[in-house]
Structure formats: structure tokens, C-alpha cells
Figure 1 (cartoon, helix red, strand yellow):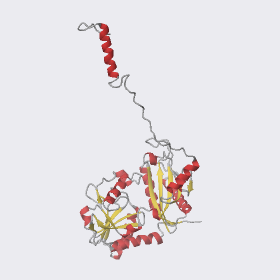
Figure 2 (cartoon, one colour):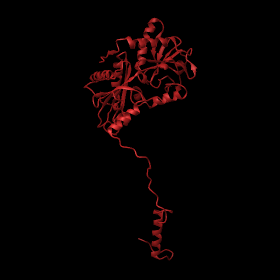
Figure 3 (cartoon, one colour):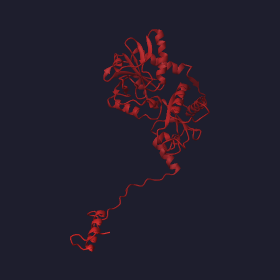
Figure 4 (spheres, helix red, strand yellow):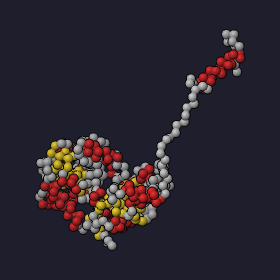
Length: 376
């Protein structure tokens, strides 16, 4: 309703003025009838082809050919093994990809025998339970472990590799793009790779340079669960490589040595003690546990005076005469220079050499941590 005329202006004239003002609010300057109408944006790109099954698999084979060679893969989704690389795939809506809701672990194949698969499977199942991923097999953890061990063995045999690295994953599984795994089917995957695919290279075991990295540790649960969340691990290695290192050394908020990106740290002190950080803030490495086991033999021989797992201040570690990193069951990596200063003499130490020898002998000739495989 328009009010009475103001300043003598006729009511009709005031109505027209009000309409003009409202029109100006809705159509700013330059957008009137005389202005050029803005064009809608269009993406001018070359068309992407829709591929048929045969073309897709052929292209995947070509793309994967120069990459790491995987001898065989098992998927619980089909309960079978494939040896064609182009068939080794996960559904895109598997929650290992969608949310990183998956755990993994490893074991080794040495001279046609599974090595240390049980200790890894124990940790793997603990990780799955910690991540609240339903176990994919059996009515109990032990039944699931037995089934997983059998599948791993059969996948190794299918690969034909007698010396290999094995990696296996338990995922919340495929089903949707949600946050929780409701509606998903838990899945188990196994891949068998040749030794050339190992994270640790043969030349590393002759001695490397390493650097302390200023990155946070994983929070407690993720530190102790071997999950697929390895962003901080990746950044740790990258930060060390930026300076000429390899894997990086992490320090906790108390100024104590924690771990490397995917490896545990071990030191030999001046008084010939073998020391390594406790597992309260880091993953319980299986390789460093084997090192501590064989190191007791060196104590009996008088080469070492003690074996200890403890908090290690950086200053204490810097005074040590030998330093090594360990992972992957058989990989002991001597560190000869740390933060551009020599560790001890700057060469691989005698105790480190003995530890490498003892672990190698256990892997190749031992019986306690092994399962024989029957190849065709």
C-alpha cells in the first residue's frame, strides 16, 4: 500500500519511481535490456572414450608392464588367485580406498619357505580388531589366522617365487562411499612380489646416511595399529630424502628416539649394550624383535654386555658407536652417518655385521619360524 503523496508528488508518479528502484536492485548496471547476455561456460576438451572390457584390460596391461611385478594376487571377493597383473584390482568403493579403513602386514619367502608368517599374522589380526574390521574368515581369531596362512601359502606357490615379499590386507571392504562400513563386505587380499620390489634395497644394507625429521608421531592407536594410514610415514621418508637421506629418524615429544618411516631403530652403546626404543609410542616391529632375540647369543659370547628396550634420549643415541634400522624380516640397514656426522667410525660396525649374519642364518637355515611350501 502506497502512502500519501510527499512534497506534492502525484501518487502515480511515486509508484513509478518505486518500481524503477526495485528494478535497479534486481538488474544492476550493465545487465539491462541493452547489455550483452553472459554466455554459459562450457568445457571444451577432447572426448574421453568409453572402453569395452577387452580394450580396458589391454590398456591396463600396457600401463602396468613397466611397473613392479606382482607374481600372484588373491582376493576373498572371488575366493581365488590371479596371475595376470591387469586383473589385480580392488573395487573403487572398497573402504581401503574410500576411507583408508584397512590394515596390512607382511611376511617373507626364503628359499621356498614362509618365514615369520605367524608373528605377522598375530599382529595383523590385532590390527584388524583394533580398527573394528570384522575378520573375514572363521568363527575365531585362531581360525581366521589358519585360513589366512593357508591362503598366503597357496598364493606364494601360484606365483612360483621361492624368494619373495608378501603383503596382505584386511579391509572393511567394498559396498558404498559412506563413512562407516555399514553395508560393506570385509575383504582379504594377498600379493606376492619379487625381492626387487622390496622397500629396502640391497645397496642400503652396505650403510646409509640418515637425518632427523621434524614431523609429529602418529597418535597412539594409529602408531600401534598397522593401518593403511601411512601419510606421516611417507612425509618422513620424503623429508629425509630432501636432505640426502633415505628413511628419516623421528623423535617424540620427550626428546627420545621413536622410529624411522617404516623401520625400527637400534643402537650399540660405547659399553657394548644393544638398546632400542620401547613400543609404547611406536609399532611393535617384528624384525627388531628378532634382532633382540639373536642379540642374546652375542651376550653369551661376550660380544655384547646387555640387550635392552628403553627410552633413548637423542643425546644418548648420538654417543652410540653403531646404529641400524630394521624391517622386512631380513633387512638390517646400517646407518654410518646421522645428521652429517659419522656414527662411530663412520663405517658399518662389527656388531651390526654379526647381527646381519645371524638374522640371515635364521631366515635361511632356521626351523622355528618357517613353513615348507610344496611347489608343483
